Length: 258
Length: 335
Image 1 (cartoon, helix red, strand yellow):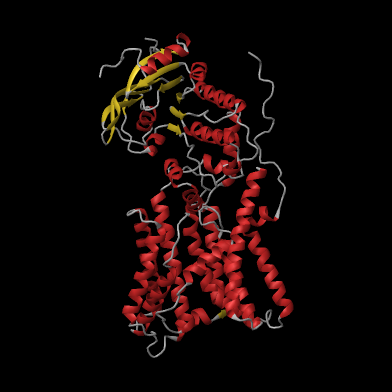
Image 2 (cartoon, each protein chain N blue to C red; image 1 turned 180 degrees about the vertical axis):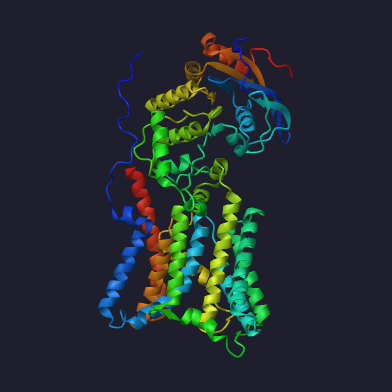
């Protein structure tokens, strides 16, 4: 196996999730290591999004075990995950379009003025604005203005705001669900650059993508999901698009026994 | 593989921007213009408009209505609606009057009256967040319930007894240095709402919930608490309005506040609020209330048939929203 020797930062095994009669995950396994980009791929309906929602606290699994840094992990909601340094860029971005980029970056984690003004819940807008400018600069994300509503930004800029928010707070794992879908060429490259820079900070980046050449270009490892189960793992350096397609479509035998 | 030759040259900055009226005054700028024009015209064509007597009369008329509109605005900002404010106002006012007639001390009677509003607001909030009822339906039900209760407990009769205590009536009819108390209270409520909405975490959460409740939830915003709170505040301000109206009239009127909910919504919309949530300001709601008050007042002074005024305010609502839509589309095109 092409796994790095150190133990996985985030590890899941035997994850089951049912929606009524539909079994989206049938004993799925997943591993992510610190300081790597791991791509999670699979055909439509393979269970990628469900697995990510389980791992990021948005869904509770029916069965299975998860560990973070060797400790058992039990997430009741996305806030639990956030407290542990696990962040998610959702496919629909989950931004408040009427708030500006700085406000979105700090939403749910606002900086307050020092007491006594802080006791009134008074916002320290200057600090948050400066923090946002710094966060964008450190990722080399260019925005025309962090004080205009996100609604007035372009699709790529919105994507960058969502990515920057997740990255600014993530200390251990970032999930990115199709972060480059619907982006132009320049912006796609910008987001991929950001992903690499986040990895270099020692964070585990989990990339969900349909774009296989892009997956091979940016990911260090690839885990393939099929019909709710992990069927293959590759080091991207050793894999071709053809290998990935074969694994996704069932031409490779199941890796994890059912 | 060719090298990347071009990168978006814009930097992340909060550089200088073109300052427009909209940038300074926000979305209520259109309302402010309308208000100034209306005041200007009335000052020119009517000798009485700018007299102290008329202005303090105008202030008294608008104040209670402005307080209700500010509460309504908070709910509208979360993309909700509160149709029960008029009925809640009547119930709070009548309860206060009944307690006063029964000899209960003034502060306690006021406290209970306002508490009635808060409780009904909390019920609205629970119906919306726990039973997942559409706000329109939940508060429409409360509109009927609160009105029914006030008619039952008063037997549809004015609550006056042998006259409410003078100290209580002074609250809404007195002045401080010539400024009507009602105006001071309404200005205080508006300023407090402005502060909370623009400067505090709670205010930011109100806009976040109105913008996209699911996004807000995922970001860690306590969406339910915020939603229940805005209905409770709307109920509180409706209760306060009821107490003040009872004080002003010296009696609890069971039919008071009929139609106030629609006027409050109209004031918010004229002041730049969007019923889709997350757009609007306390200053805008107060401006909207003031515009409607000035038009009514001016109409009376100029002896214009009140029926025409209703038409004018109806047109104003449509123009305000149409203008906003047009503005939004223009911004989308240029953006």
